[in-house]
Image 1: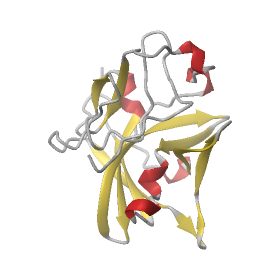
Image 2: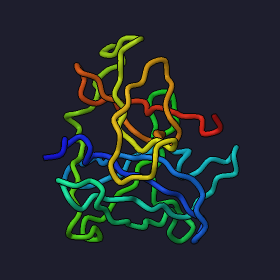
Image 3: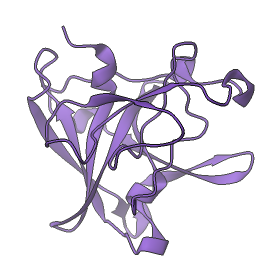
Image 4: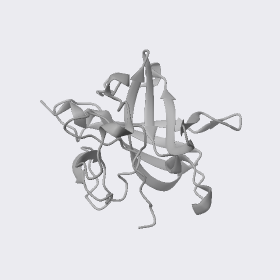
Length: 187
């Protein structure tokens, strides 16, 4: 059996129509029976870099024993010129988080996924000390294209490209989601 944590994460590709733009990662979150994909806001819009995709493709696992088996779901980012994604905010204002609700009925029947829930959320910033080792699960750009996500340790804020959009986990706090890890995709 595959580690369930790996089924919480999806490869996210951005497009302008049929033209591919960038790649990133995201994770699944469930609240009150509703399913969401969470990623970084700069994945779905980034005016400074002139990144304006109109849709994303989410790579979904279809076999809990073989993560190289997957299918793709296309999701429009705008309907009637209005975004279907929601901007993340905290007490300081907008943060680099975007949340997209997914229609469970639109998912292929063979999809296998696991979701984080409100029970996994960090309750306060005081729960995490500076220097805490983190585990990030995603799809780094420098590794061969594959359907299975990789679990990478992060220290000092260094992440691989395309790891943007994932939550951070540590041993004492199973999920830290108040602030998403921000990756400058220019580096």
